[in-house]
Length: 101
Image (cartoon, rainbow, N blue to C red; front, side):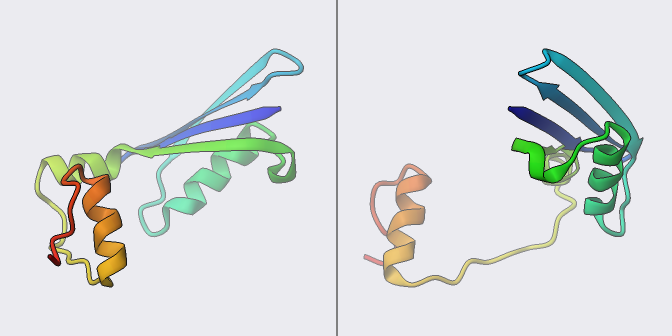
């Protein structure tokens, strides 16, 4: 199986491809494409010669979003949900009960 790990940062997109069968590791570092971060990810995949249909997993992280949250440079958001979904989100957040009552 081939596994890809990718991190989209504010300046660079870093990618590692691990081929379990060949015990081979390939890495790429490409400029982050701010207008559409997917373009940078695709460029990194191309740089390591990855074929999407051959990948068993892609693990994605983004320091761009993490930094925006930590620096409070992110838009205000809200979540509109049904009662059932609210219970799920509440459980995930560790509250164990629905904020809807």
